[in-house]
Image 1 (cartoon, rainbow, N blue to C red):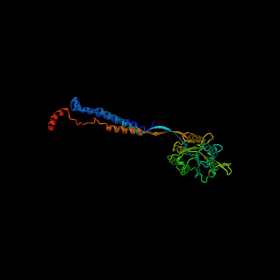
Image 2 (tube, rainbow, N blue to C red; image 1 turned 120 degrees about the vertical axis):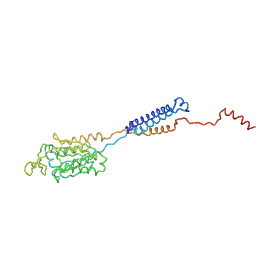
Image 3 (tube, one colour; image 1 turned 60 degrees about the vertical axis):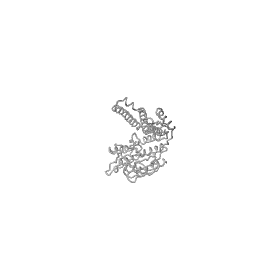
Image 4 (cartoon, helix red, strand yellow; image 1 turned 180 degrees about the vertical axis):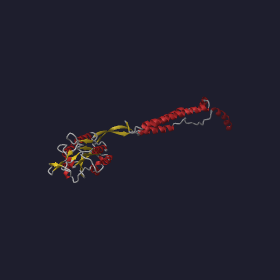
Length: 363
């Protein structure tokens, strides 16, 4: 047995104690009033009945009824069986940075290539989940939620940073696009929703933290994979055939590099921290860190999101409540003194006096 609203129990105990003390105090005041009225023995001799015991019974019934009423309010329940809770579906939107800085080779063979490989592995290992995708640079483009994970992996695999029409790193726009993908899907609202943001830069145009806060309020989790750090990395210039033809240079002729500023790192950390259970993974040891997100999601699918057996409880508050009502009715019908019975019989002495008169009348 368990209590659905246990906090009513101490409240009921306190109120029952107050009622009991009030009744006891009333009894003491009654005795005091009798002693002040006159001699106790003579007053008791004038009484036809002593109501003390009946008042005690009525007080006990009232206190027990109060306790039972608050016990009923605490919603007592008992386990009547078990039920099978089906697995919770998982929707994952992969938001991937396709800015040209993703061609950097501090992660072998390149940031973009390694991210695509690890995303394909993530899709393969999360069997049963649905996936959507958002590819972004200056502007986002997306693929709606689908149970066909291979289609998502293919969508991202065939894109290259050189294919993006607008350069930049518009994280805020990409997160809004991912939020809209989930909002437009009629099934997503009943599923566990996760956005995985994979980027190596910071948004200098919008406010991605504010967007992430709004997403988090809707119950969606954002995991962030930060590729690259504060160490400058040169950006290769990739030709149409996918080969390196040199390194990108600025207008001054110097090689262009990519690195995250302290502000950019904080921005990504704040995005992850703004949603429930969001985590930040920083790339290291030649990997992007997507594998850690994959493992975390797999653990959730095998744990809290998996099919499980749950105990079913039934409410039985009506039993103590009904008993409380019965005791209150019984308390009302118990009088403080027994009911008086009136007799129409004539006393023997009076009968003896009336007999001669009756005989005279008959004569």
